[in-house]
Image (tube, rainbow, N blue to C red; front, side):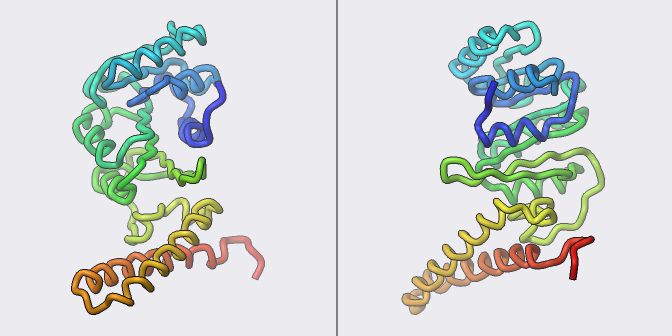
Length: 239
């Protein structure tokens, strides 16, 4: 099974495990890849909609893996018992939905070894939720596919570490490793915010424009702080 760049980044953050649960499995491609690659012995492919789950079931059967990948119709983690899986994957959905799934499935989450998440929106809120609920992001990745940027993160249970606001927005681990795709994304964000700010200054006499300019200026400062991480020398680098 060959995955897209986005799904490959998700799958690569899954640790070797006995059982993984893929929430919102859609076509079932990630479960098939995990089993075929020997990353997971078993996978529970879960979806709230019958149509996608049936597509997944057909793909799984076609791969000859019906005995190792179970399809399960359920909303989020409501159909997963504690200790039934080692890892949960939630990819390709909004950040608010991911937070709801983790919150409503807290009993199952508490028994997991790790969570692999790929939120499509409200990414800072997801990072903050994890920090506030005893889940530490230990690894992140970012890919560019079809003109869109996708951050991926793996979280495990542990003591929270301090974060600056810009690290919640852009990813402490991504910044620490000076991820090249993130740098490209930040450069784009910098250019975009400069353009928006210039346009707003032309209408600064408007109360709405003034408030928006303050917001954009604050966001631009977070971008500047994040880009500053790429200028710092890493341990072992020559002066």
